[in-house]
Image 1 (cartoon, helix red, strand yellow):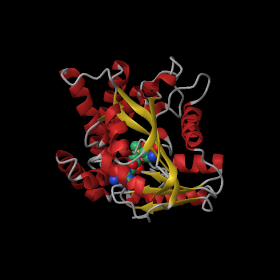
Image 2 (image 1 turned 90 degrees about the horizontal axis):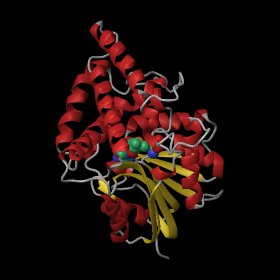
Image 3 (image 1 turned 60 degrees about the vertical axis):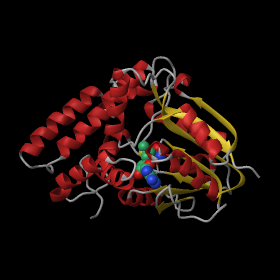
Image 4 (image 1 turned 90 degrees about the vertical axis):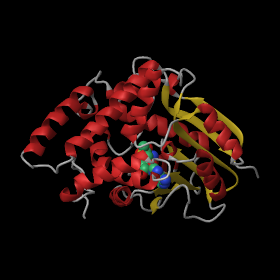
Length: 333
Ligand SMILES: C[S@@+](CC[C@H](N)C(=O)[O-])C[C@H]1O[C@@H](n2cnc3c(N)ncnc32)[C@H](O)[C@@H]1O
């Protein structure tokens, strides 16, 4: 079905299949590690248009920057990664789990590198390719449909690999890192931002466990890693010279990464992201679903996103979770 690129209601799914897709999503979540591909595909079919409506084309968080808008803070977070990798014209780079390509286009424009996006979601691949074309960036940006657990590329074919909050979806971190290691040329760098529990997280504390379970449910995650899971996984996959640190404390104290979901510093563009905006969207969907103006299931999708947003804010306030554990490592050679 043709994509309607600017509609908040999911266009990936024919309306009559919405309820069935939701139920497939829910049953794949019960076996998140084994059925990760089904879980991710149904999840992103359901929520991609909602994300774009509330967030734009870059589906990630950023530490707030004093005096900067939400969009400027997102760009600064992307450039930090690009500079860390040393992106430059002439490099061939892989963006693992590229979404609809917001970071890819931003980094290609800023650094002039040639970037291949990789994404398991066919719907997002279609959108990403269309946006690359619309932006006039087809000379630098392309997109591949595939799984980062089995990357459709030759050994040693990239000068760098990065991910922006995508490996949170990996059913096994070390296996994902090993695939990335394989497609990097010797001496090349892999870097990214991952979703992790912080050392403040107490697995014996039922309240902590419950909020983390809601984050997993609302974001289609098979689990949430610790900092050590990331660094030890990288080492086990063969990487060396590993640097890693949480970027959340880099934020201006007035604008921690979860502020955009709370509702302070409201702008009209930012309203759908906030608690108030989500309440308005939920109320509107309830009415629209009642009169069959939107497919049955739209409200349930919005409710999944509300759980995601509220649990992320709660975990952010408690300091037990970060969506920006920065890691950088090199393939020996
Ligand atoms: C939170 S989004 C981030 C998207 C993008 N990096 C951005 O910042 O806009 C996670 C992305 O990872 C992709 N993804 C999840 N599991 C994947 C897999 N096994 N292989 C390839 N892509 C995957 C999803 O389809 C989604 O595009």
